Length: 115
Length: 108
Image (cartoon, rainbow over all chains, first blue to last red):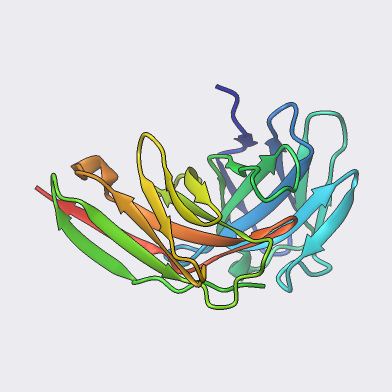
């Protein structure tokens, strides 16, 4: 069964450093998402992406964040200057199309630890 | 954007049926209701989705009343491996918001 993959599984970085989290969505999917989950809290929507541009973003997704689909398979989330509060699990998701009946499939996540 | 409200936690004995209700009072006409399961340190996993009335698949049933302001996920005969957090999502298109989820603990 096709699945969303994410790398790395765990990233440790120093405050102020840039990090890039990588995702490979399911191959025929066109819509991509990033979510984050701070330890013990709910999953929070960050951004949705289609046709090489952002479709929607939440208030969490400020200027420190950016997303990119650099090639036909990868979808990345960049945090330009990490803060302690960016420590969280980051989940990528993809779906075929943004119709209500299309399911989002989530990756296993990247645990980001900012020291 | 529709918000959801669920009980924070539930306990159930193994083999029992579990019903988790989600409230979504301001659901929009085009919104579907989707339930996900999440184990610790894993991504959410799709369980079931519906628009109205009842939907059933191999793992769960989803009951949605006519006004669609709530929905109930029903898990038949739960096992220890069903211990997880269950999220109800309401949305369409490009934005989805998870509620706080319901932490289900199955007791032997």
